[in-house]
Length: 441
Image 1 (cartoon, one colour):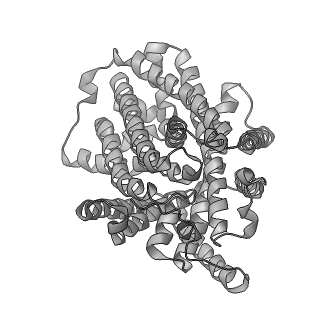
Image 2: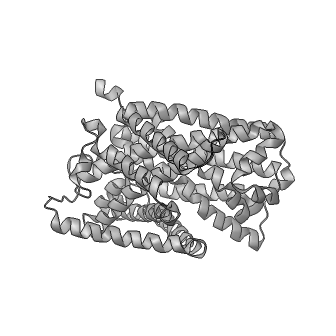
Image 3: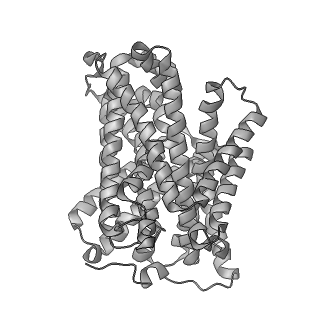
């Protein structure tokens, strides 16, 4: 009973998922979205949410039966067994969290230093990144309940700022500027923007990475997944409508990364810049906090199964901290010494591929996990379409990063191959599933 009190509540898990989804992207790539979709951007956010719901259906069905902090990797191992492919995906999945930690830390400095009028020198940037990652690593050291409470309050402040932006700007909306257009060029832009912003919903999967530390996961995993996506859809829709209603498309494109700050000026004056900057800091902080927590959980769970070295198996909630320290330290190392533009695309490619394998695992074992085969097939078709369109878009716009991500896949495959061949470790097909953590109903 005492242990149960330390479990994460439903609202704390929802806070983690929302905190991860509403990160820096809504502030930094909003201008890109308008450039692609124009006045159809609100519809692009809705369509992106539909893509996320298609994936969430299988996550919810599997997540209520497989209680494991390995999350989607536990689902894939159940569906495909222990082999080189699933081992490679495991390494890449954990590495995508490490890259995300570095990206969030760098994004934080981009808002923090200008807000306090601090010059963006390598020293100031390095100190800010180091302090930020050390702070949230220390917070994670205190345990899952502390992380959950901190995430709840950070997300509450963040959502309050965004809701203030939406409510204050709503009465100033020029509705003619948000009227959708459905000609061929606009429909093409709508589709491209929906694919780009699909990435903004990826954080809902974090729910499955905390299921072992969650109250009543059989019921709360599906609830947290769908509620968090719905909340984010409403927030994204509100922000896009208010911004388009207060600024013309050309003004938003010109403002680019500062689009929300510029949009806030008509109804909040010079306080608009401060509001958006503070909102961005809280958004990135909540995303970083949840990502460090999820990354440490994944490192622990995957090491139990033999997909990562045993050093990762010991973590905070089991009286040691190696998994947490290694995950945070590598994130700090990447943030300080690497240009992440070339490898950031790995988070996109890996996560989308994970989604596809999860849906296929669900289809293969639908008699165990429940659900309708035709729904999973339709969702798979949608996801394959999104994945192909995403890869084509990245090839056209980020060719160097696309090639780098392929190289990262190959390196992970080679590492997994030699790890399995030369490390004398007992590999199990899925110890997570063998230890009665697959709950049959």
